[in-house]
Every structure is written in C-alpha cells, then in structure tokens.
Image (cartoon, rainbow, N blue to C red):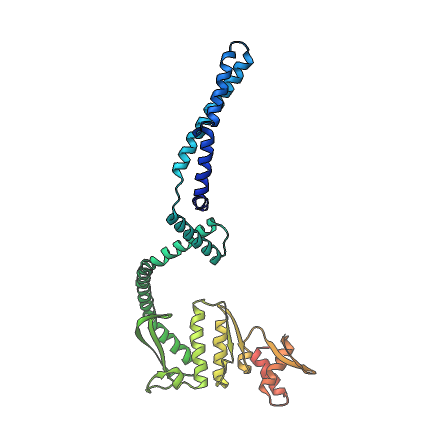
Length: 343
C-alpha cells in the first residue's frame, strides 16, 4: 500500500516525464529511434567492405530493437498509471489505521500486528465456545456425582453392617473399665446431599447407667466416662491394625484406683498390636508400660527448657513412688511401686 500510494501521489509527474521520454525516443522527427535508423542506413553500404562495420551495424540494430521495446513498455506504463484521488484517500486512511494500531499495541511491524490479531481471534473463539465447555463440564460433573453416589451408598451399607459389632465390642470394653451397666447406641440417618463423609449422619449415643435415656456423648458423659469411651473406641481401632502408633494424652482423666489399673491393662493389651504412648500421672498406668520416660523442665535465667529421659529400673521405682506419695516418698510407696512393676 505504501508503494502504491507513492506511485498514485506522483502519477502526474510520472506520466509527464514518461511522455517526454517517449517523445524523445520515437514521437518526434528528431527522435532517438529516427536518428538511429539514419545512422544504421549510413552503415549499410559498408557492410560488405569491412567485417567490423557489419558487427557495429548489428549492435546498433539490437539497440534499435531494445529502444522500440522500451517505447512500447513506456506506452503500457503510461496507460496503466491513472491519477485517482479517491483511491489515494482510501489507501491513506488504511495506512493511518495501521500506523495507529502499531502505536497503540506497541509493535513496529505489520507482521507483529498480524500475530497479535490472530491471538485475539483465538481468544475470541475460545470465549465463543465457552457455552459448549460449560455444558461438557456440567455433564462430567453429573457423571462424577453419579459415581460418588454409588460409592457413598456402598460405604453406607458397609458402615451399617458394623454398627452392631461396634456396639457389642465397645460395651465389652466399658464393662472391663468399671462401667458394666453402660448403654451405647449408634444412631444413623442420611443426608440429601453428598458431604465429605458421604451420605451418612452418625451419632454416638451413651448412658453410663442401665435404664436411663441414651443421649449424645458430648451432652451426657462426664470427664472420666469420656476418657473410658475414647479408650474403648481406640482399642477397637487398634484391633484392626489401622494405625502404627496411638498417643493417649491423659486418657486416665477422671479415673483412679481399680479403674485406673483396668485402663492400664487395656493399654497394655493394645500395645501387643501397635506402639502405644500414654501420658499419665497415675502409677497404676505407668506401671504397665514396657518403657518409662520422665518429662521435666529446667529453668536457667530467663529460659525454660523441656527434657525427656528414659528411666532405668531404680529411677522408675522412684518416680512411681513419687506418684503414690504426697510430699515425701515413703518406704511403703517404694514397696508399692515395686509391686506395681512386678520387681
């Protein structure tokens, strides 16, 4: 367009000069072609006299043919070039638009502008197909939801098949820790929509006494009862070897005496299948362990540091005796500690 615009804006001077060249070549009496014809005629009588003259004549004739061809091409070019102000204006406006676009989008070549245009076209095509993509995704979501519903229904059936066994086993454990009359029920209902837990709503209902009304554990269980319930539930988990380690942080809260010993027995039994770590202040539980660690703190200046120490046999007797004593460790406490440890 830039080349065409240059020709169009200079069309008048081009046609004028071509016309003058054409006149000089062929249109006037004293034109170059006429003069060349006369010169060739002067050499014609001499062609048979000297070979070099013949060569020169042929070269002049070749020039004559070339000049005639140039004259014909000038005529064609003159007819081809037309001054067209409307076309000049159209091309100028088009180029102005391109220059503005290059400046607007900070590019320097038409190639870069075309690449940018193609990029915009691709993005628009993507936007125009968004409805199709949405429909495809919605269909995929629906298919996935159907799969999830089937899986959640299967999980729900598997859960319901275990309720009776869990209730029976948990009541057995509760009886072992001094709650022979406890009641425990699993209440099951279903949601309308899928959740992270599937389609089940499960509540654990409890009452420590026979004949009472069962209610949610959080509403009815005391601290000690809650500790024993948690112990029971976790003991069921350990029977399935689902965990490598279980940590009880003061599972003995609210229990003492004979019950504490029974809790210790259950913890000891659990440790046959997995590692059990119990944080306790009760000697009955501490005495059941295979390893006894003592956690203590030391303060130096403004810094307090916690330490943990594996106790040997003598240290272990001393620490359990401290649990059994008040301020002063008595011989009776030491003997009781030995008895708890079976030393």
